[in-house]
Every structure is written in C-alpha cells, then in structure tokens.
Length: 377
Ligand SMILES: Cc1ncc(COP(=O)(O)O)c(C=O)c1O
Image (cartoon, rainbow, N blue to C red; front, side, top):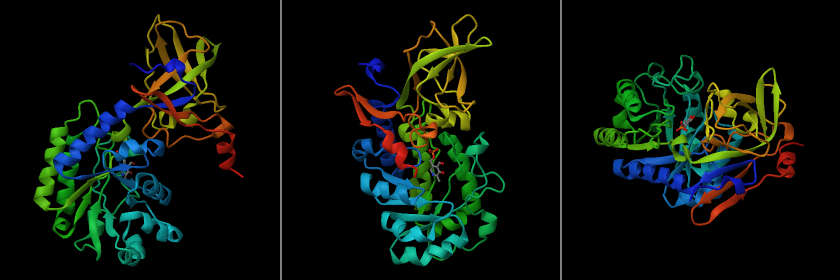
C-alpha cells in the first residue's frame, strides 16, 4: 500500500517505517558480519519519537555535544562516544556522565580532560587527521589544509600521549567502501605505528552503506581484515546511512505567481528553514512526479514561504499544470534535514509523522506557537 499523501496535513516530514527498517537491517548486517560497533551519529538524526524502532537493532550512539549525549542516554538508553572540536569546561562533568568514550581534538584538550575522564573510567581517544579525503565538496571535507579537525601525523610525532586508548578519524562524505579502502591505506601509513598500542579505532562517518550500489561485502571484508590485522575494536559512526532515503517533506502549493515569464509555486515550506542543505551545499532535491526542466512541459520554480529573497529553487517540469492545493513531495528529507531546521520568520515548523503498512499514518510530533516562543525570550 503506497503512502496516501493526500490525507497528510502539511507541512509534514513523513518517515516511512519500512524504508527505515530496511536501512537498519543492512547496517546491523555489517555490524554482525564484520564484528564492529556501529553508532548512530546524532547530528544526522535525533527524532527520538522513533527510537523504539532503533532500539530493536541494538546500535550505540555518537554525540557531538552534551545535549546529544544526554538525549542518547535518556531516549536510546546508551552511553555515547563523543567528539567535539572543543569541550566546555563547565559541561565536562555532565558529558562524562553520559559517555563511555571521549575523543579530544588536540593535545591541549587531551591534557585538560585526561585526568577527569580517567577518574570516571571513560575511554580516551584522540582525533587524528589523515589529511586525505576524496569528497568533492569543500564544506564536507575535514581534511583540507589548515582544517581545525584532528592532529596530523607530523604534529603527533612518534609518541602516543599517555592515556590514549583509541584513535578517531572522520574523512568521508556519502562515500563507498573503496573510498574507505583508500583512507585506510593512508591511515595505516601515517598512524599504523600506533595501532599496536590502542584498543579501538573510530573510522567516523560518511559510509553510505545503505546507498544503492554500495558494496556491503567489500566493506565487511575491509573491516574484518583490519580488525584481524591489528586486533583493535572498530567503531563506525555513520549518520546519513541510517535514514538515507527513508522519507519525505510533504508540502502544499498555496499560490502560483508569474513574473517575467517565470512561474513560481509558493509552498507552505521553506528551503532555508526546512531543507537548508539544498541552499547550503547546494543541491537540487528530487520532487515526486517532476523532472529537471524540460522544453514543452509545464515548468515551475518552487518558492519558499519565508521572506528571504533566495528562498527558492528551480526549475522542475511536471506532466501537467500545477494548481493551488496540489501536494509537492520532496524526496529524501530525513537525514540532516529534520535536525537542521529553523523557525526563521516564525513560519510553521513541519510536523513529523511515521507511516507503516499496518497502522497507516501517525503524527509523532507537532509544533506550535509555544515552540517558536520558547526558543526566544
Ligand atoms: C565526526 C563525525 N562523525 C560522524 C559523522 C557522520 O557522517 P555521515 O552522516 O556523513 O555518515 C560526521 C559528520 O559530519 C562527523 O563529523
């Protein structure tokens, strides 16, 4: 039974439970077959209303802030692995309460928090920078020269600082296993000398193992080989892979305006507020039933509901003319989208819903004026 988008009050993010479960099953298979630990990176998705589904699959969590660590503890029931470019001294006692592993970004940070972490029995790691990434997008490349992330092999020298039990690197973005293979070759050359002295290696995120042509078997064999060779625990902390292609942002056309020959469908959603990566990265999202601009077909820009002049994207062509009241369904709007929204202009925040074959559509969360008001004072 396909989702009946017409019965959904917009704006609304709709998570398709079966698509989500398909992803979780793939990731669980990798975890078990390779004998590694796989954590959900909370920065990509933290809609805790659906965490009961995640809990069935037994994943841990990785956090990048105290808030994420606390949410993982409270709603997923796990102690997290945390990494942040720097920690706040005043938050450290709480961070240590919610975490099992903490990775520091610099030797200064390591020195600052080593004793405290050791006292609490937290495993200490160091983020290293292999200075290699195959990502084509600068905004997602943590290995650019001068990057603030991690210590390079040259800076680290030959001595692993006291107390360090693990190494953490993150270099990939929506990458395949062959990109990981390249990163591992560089990592082993640059940091291999430390591997006999650590207990774990966190290989960060960017492993899009739920993507269409991802070679899961290759990933499993890479990880299993690495683990066998160095006898370390391997940790992956993908974000996107968990909720990649698992849902939609459903919008309604409120008006259609035409100026200088350009037709714009004005929607009850906003790119800047509700699909910020489209403008930030930037990328053109897929709309169900539409194609890239095609001569001879009804063609429209999609205009956001906020007053930012640049809050629009174009152009899409449709089979027929669009009308006020038509639904526009943006594909793949769950990972990194629901966590990055804003209430700029006070526009309505889309509700969040879950759809499955058995129960149909259920609203998980609705937003009201009070959510808008409570962010401010
Ligand atoms: C340190 C770290 N770990 C994990 C992730 C998750 O990456 P992805 O969602 O691309 O899998 C990120 C993303 O920025 C990250 O910075």
